[in-house]
Length: 234
Image (cartoon, rainbow, N blue to C red; front, side, top):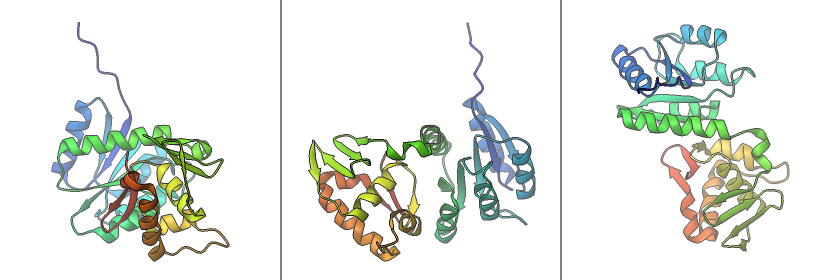
């Protein structure tokens, strides 16, 4: 007996390209997601105000109200700030990608993209958003034999403690809390620096080099995203 497809998360897709909307709608619907497609930023803001989606796929190059402005609106409102936003960008838009991530976007996909890549990225973002909460900041993080214990400010590999500076620990812990999420250097600076511990965007690269060296083979968990920043491998 065939079982009915269970309705999954509601995804809002905002893009002014009709062909792309049809492609994304078809593939998401086939996977059982409830999909709403809109072609303008104004309609998207109004729709979110009426019904909160579980995720927003947002083209950055929209007429009138562009994707960055929509992202800024969503992430500055307490009611909508936790809705994951995945940006759609064209090649060569690194500056817009960085701007979007700094506004709080959760991931980005470069056009053209394959439906399989789209689905994999969306599932990963939804999975991360569901398991990530502010209360997790004190939770022990494990990645194979690498263990990060925030309460003790301790990192071990195979049970052996690794000596890290305060900023190195903060950087590693910050990235590890959101595995797979890309963070810009300025986001890392905001998270790592303290009132008496100056960190600059340039020094982030130095910190990463030193951190990778201390982690040895496990240093590969910190990935460089060219033109954007860094992420902790899932």
